[in-house]
Image (cartoon, rainbow, N blue to C red; front, side):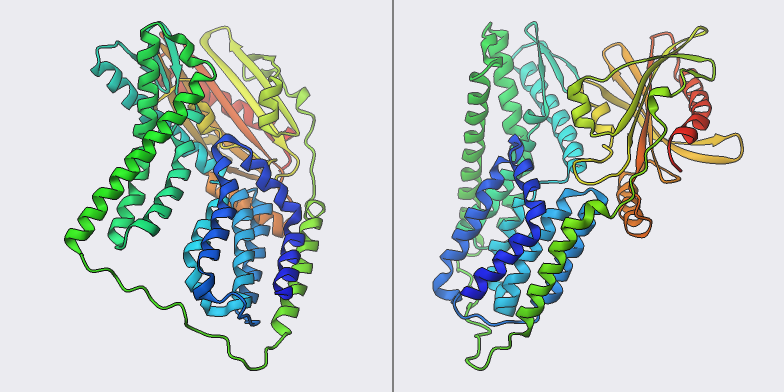
Length: 500
């Protein structure tokens, strides 16, 4: 037991520089369930104390490759600015300690370790995509329910206009706040209440529709109350109270699903499945070798030292001050603008330029935003802008990739989106400009971030985001042609200010 405590302490020491990130994201409202995950894991292990025999330890070499793999995941997360890999690396380190002490017997603890994975919140870029999709599903279903009871609803993306009020399906109301806790709940309910694999899979697959339906009912009830003159329901504490009531409703739907699935199990497979005996791979009473534990401890010391040195390993390159970015671009005259402190805090950029450009002979208005990062790591990295563009009630009309020819010398890819909100139209484009590359795919962005951090010790880069607000009389072809010309004129200036 002393060896277990000592090695567990070494893991905590090694990963200590990263543990603060856990608590930082756990404090977010959508991730507050993560605080319960270590406690559930500990209870599930304690429940197996009589059959697993935790005191029967040995030092198995299986833990060594698992620990090396955990460090590779964690360093990949640091260099590529993907927090999820950091959390996954810490989880793998705990698993490697279990493999070191118990060898193949750890397979009897596979369900507790599956639950422990839930202490790792979803990656931000995955969360943004899921949030937006759930926002749209919730708003559409809510509008249908409100129309079904005779209320007139105008839906604009994630905005619902009902009863003289505007209801916004915000990120916290998208269903994602319920999504991960409900998956965790579905796994626990299936583990204790169901026997067959098919029934457990159905229980997990029910999470998405239950989360969307529950949140749609919440918005529906809010809309009905607002239409009846009870606008106080939009304020606290009534808004949060309604959220808790809807979560209780989601639990009720899960319990109902459990009863139905248990009934079907009894009808289709009445005989209980025999559970495998956990008494496999007993530790022999012979001599225990200490060399795997010694190597394990040395690896933890080396890996922990590396975590403390990582911020000093990358070269930080500063761009020319973007304050001096030109205001005359291809016949367009610009006006510099400032971002609000709230937006700047979420942008994490080291420098930025934000300007509004007009041309006398053209009715559209162009907004140019260039955030620059001298280095990138977790909580200091470029955001994928697509989900930000889709907020505020905008609907996607068309999206794709432009192949933009730059005076015959080079062609770059630019992501474009046509968005609509009421009578307004927005043509948005963006690309990543990083270390001589132009990228639009967020997965390629993460891959080259990791590759260049290891091979070139560079993680600097910029996001170039150009949007045109189109008046009603401007047709699509004319707007796209004008924005393409602006991007071509913008390119030489970008090369002067962003390190290649």
